[in-house]
Length: 469
Image (cartoon, rainbow, N blue to C red; front, side):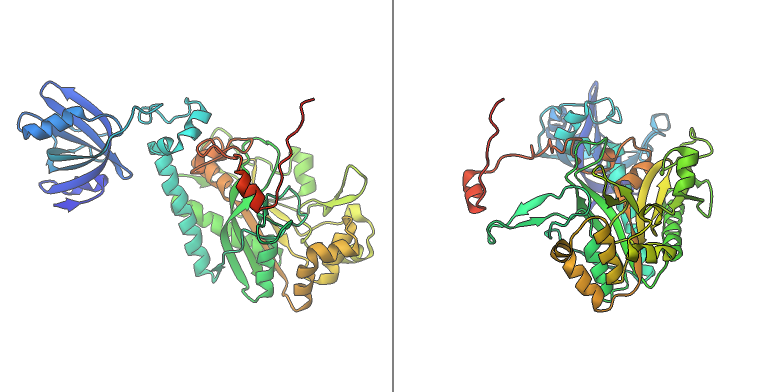
């Protein structure tokens, strides 16, 4: 007998098959028992009755929702009046010859078959995420997420990119959000940091002669609660040597169009090439630098991509100094290089940054980088770093730049955000297999959680409890 996916059984009428999966539903109709069997590929009706071996019938009568079973039987065409056109397997059923219970299941805390799950309290869904993921909607989401990433990888491979993994344990550097830090047991009093992005490593890969790099990268930012952001998330990270802004934007636009046309043919891109707005135009016209450019916001299949360019390089801090608007490694536009080096007219300097937006959300951002060490050093000085601090935090970058690095630029997509928009999901938690709450808690694993005193001692860490006011 042939073991197969449940969804394949429709192609094997008259054959004996072995199917394994979960019981979605059991229906007793007099002396006939119908069992809906489900695996990742779909659902199929199986049946036993007076003609079935008595011992098999007894087992079938005990089965409950979400029990895991192996069923052997013959694939038969259903009578015409019993066909279920709502199911891909609705024209067949399995006449059960044998049932083996692989595992029993307690009653689930919520229903996972009759709805999409939006009505269930989100914290309950996240606590039992492994049950929630059994829903057809979420199983389909995981499959589409896989296909999106697979398509990206294939397309970039054909364009000559290397996928390179960069370290997760790295050094804490001041780049924007707070770092998650990891204490070192072997180097007492020292800490690693989890990367907010692979920014420095991908630029060092350009110094290494890789020339075309990408990565499906995990990123970590210890931010305060903000909407549906996640403390850890996924980027499609990309960097290319010997390019200007137009090259990088064109490459990304081609990849986004390819994704939509390949995997979402039912959707339509409202304008190609993607429209471009300067930061000034976007703010004056829409009041935001991530405008919704759709012609009809009620059309769920319209995708309005756009580029935002000509961002200010610097903005004032609350303390009256300057900080970067994107990242400190960006290059100024060519006509502003002298202003950077002379540290004048700071508020007028424009950067080579480019953001790509979709239906009112930023889905990616990048820039051409300051590949000349004296330009990067001047940028870091403008935002307030002393010469000593520059050497401490960025000396490794400056040394690499002084040893021959080509002009380069790149981009990072917020992959979770892009997928949620393409799938029409309300927030990114719906497209992440095991998401965290808005305040960074993992309800499934009950994290973060205290660690033992023994672990603290090994790390030379003392936890000081706050005194009550």
